[in-house]
Image (cartoon, rainbow, N blue to C red; front, side, top):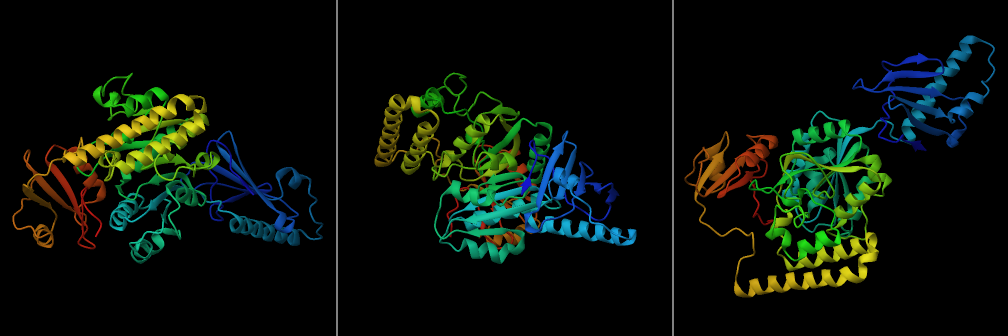
Length: 484
């Protein structure tokens, strides 16, 4: 049994090299030179009944008891030996056996980050997400776990073929939902931190570094969300939200938050009055990117599997706060192609989202049940009726982008001519204009994903549309892309 101390005590590798004997154990520091650890040797191992107990002392020292618990070990009688040489040999062998037993029974070495990605029918977006994640964690002690919810597009075979040992793959025989699939990976997570990441995102090294640094300097922080932008660089308001109390939900359902986006009283759902370029303690984070302390995530039980899709991030954020931690919004940017703003007018989205809200209220606000259920159902009916009317009249959904001529093309690549030929573009420029309808293709073989996200974020403007050319398979990934 492995007992990990509270407040993320670091249980580090037991390394023979660089360790030194100290009394009845071995002492040393972890490979980053941060935390001192002691491996205490216990006699009378007791076969398979041995325990491994790890705890933190003043958040500085980790003590691992190999064999019996420490009190029992202290009281255990040392086997009699007639010769000091034989006794020394016995201790050396016992120490080696115990350490090997410990490493076999549990993972004492803790990684820095576990990235968890649940995928369903999105293998080309997923490939780009994985490429960006692998680039972001290069040189770090991290692992990437992909859970495929029985995609019908060959995602599992695709991941095995293209990524091999770089990614741990969990294949489900049917679609078990977002929350349950994430929980499968969370149960196996070995990282000090776990990142819940959507399969249609681009993550960067600087973003992960910002999250790690924020966690290290803010022990009260349980989870982090970031500055999410869509594929054209526009901020996604679901990056930071308030708890959907009855009043906050009422304002969202009936459109008051949209009419008064800067009101602290009417627009709390998306917290639009908070500066998106500054860090803030917030209530709700998006499940597209949730950077959590693994020990805390496992302590609260991960996602509630009653939520099949949508709402599970609201529920988890709420439970993290109830556990005594804060959720923080940190303005480090990632790209999230299919944000809430691209699907919120869908009748199916409206129905599924508000059904998830009913589950949330039944669980956390049962006293409002009699009053709020009719309000939610009325809001769902109004939204669905409005969407049907718009569709019947041919009126574009609010927030949707009008169809426009492609305008001029820009190709950013060391091999611009070849990329243009592959994309069937005859005339193009290699410089982004200051205005006008412009389509920009960026070659991921010429630019790092970190640089690509920086470009999209810094140059976002109306009429500027971004597409990423995959140099490995010749596919262009863009916000409007349909899976082949």
